[in-house]
Image (cartoon, rainbow, N blue to C red):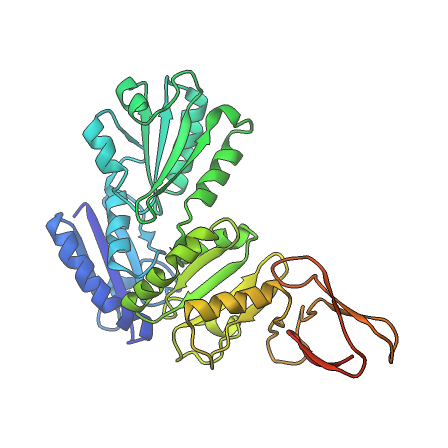
Length: 373
């Protein structure tokens, strides 16, 4: 077989149980395209599982004739598995010359990059080809060079140096990088690929997690144990995630694929779903959504606003004093006199406001249990 994906399991674990249904669906779809997906019980057939040393289970590998095995590190979803297999059959990047081919290509994957060049440019093409090889397991890449009909259809200025476009069919969104403004070559193009490939709500995987952390933006994690439950979360939060796409990163998490992540984010009850947490990467702060509260969109938005206002203390493993728990509240004046409370600083935002107070009146302020003023 030219293209074959092998799933290997050793003992029944939650992730393999979660994978079974998705694997069955992916297998049926792969069969329609003359591809093969095989599942091997490594306890019964250990010699077939000696692909890599110190393997963890379940593991998924792509095997191709005369090529080294490629370990799949994407989401454990049937659509993601088949997209991965489809990428392996394409030339990366794929030259495009026909209108119909271009239209189909733009929707052939969850994330599709196409480089449009009015005329051949050796340096730009070389940079792009290298990056296409680097990210070929995650995204699909194409090129349109010197085909005026396609360039005009995509409204590419023939006088420009060229443009790199990313198509995201699930979001119905596109982003563009005008190569005329690119000065440093590979770094700027790669930065665009890494940042623009993110969907409004991204399925977390070992491939993309380090890249999402590098963005230094607040990460909003949403946990659900099944694909259908995560699809429901996507539907509920999609508009919200689109509206705040530039402010933070919204992530759907399969807890079976990341079994240690919930406790690391302060979600200590790993059986209660849906669950969520916010991680302020730049400030090294973590805010788990209270697992005793219902997790509706309205409640999550209100909770997020309290974080932004500095009214929620950050979580610290093991309890004790909260790291970054400064609510931004400052008391001004002497005891027994009229004082003002300055609010600002913590959380997602900044800003100050002053609230006049009366001596002896007890005021409850988010982030401060009982402040007697």
